[in-house]
Figure (cartoon, rainbow, N blue to C red):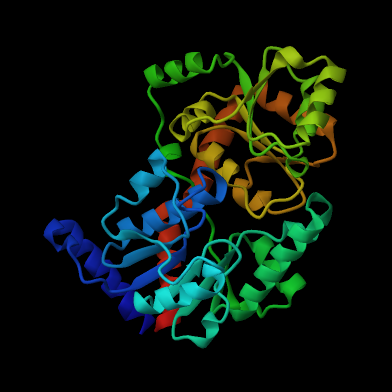
Length: 399
């Protein structure tokens, strides 16, 4: 049954590509999504949610993708997302109080949704008592592995929602093998209920920018000619201070460019910069338009991501697609994202990180090898492959 439906999906896809008039469709499947982040967040889980749904809508246009959110933010990438013919924003009909938890079920039933996918750790309460099949994506259980990084009430809320969703969902998608093992160990979930489906990154990272565009970006942000790049929220877990400590022993021709939202941890970073006298070697950027981000990656000499713990590590994927040698930290799942030809260091060893950065900067042949083999490895996360795996998962639970 599963194979025949999957084949039918591909046949329908090919037919619609050859016959654009078929795009006015009677949907084969109506799939609903928790769209809180897709409709409101411009980074992180917002980008993940939009990329996933948009990839499905293009690769399997015979289906209808309904995005449920209590509100929607006006922004270029969100507006463009909802302009897709088979992606539809669904606002509350049955009241807003606890809508995402309870009342949304009435809307899902009215809309004849067959599958509901909670894209971030939660699904509606009692969905298991309806005819609607449910999938939940678990990105990480960092709040249990490193509780000290979270407020007590937040940690308890995250745990309650995610544990409950894992128990009640028909299928759990873990974004890495490490996350799958965490779910099995910490929530005692049957491994057969969990499927690992990796994430890809936005397609804009997969095409080199022209020299003209790169030069415009460089001058627009006053970027240094030679720089090391770090991207991610400036919080303790992401471990930016380790890069600062390593920078003092790195070739002085290279500066550090940091892109990310500041949190209270930034005060620690500032003190370290001041103590080491590195203020003139570090550039902080924020609120970078998403369209410019791939260009900033592409001009970097090395990408460094020494996070203590991640569920996967999308910035590593972005760096590898951008042709940038990458260094990450051991201890979680970053080896899954970076592959055998990236370099991994202890998240507590600044000397090891400095040595690794200098090794790459001094060796042109190593740079070439890391770029080529990194790009080859990262194809396993290419959107069509990941999207097909996800559609197979959907088909499997409704067959």
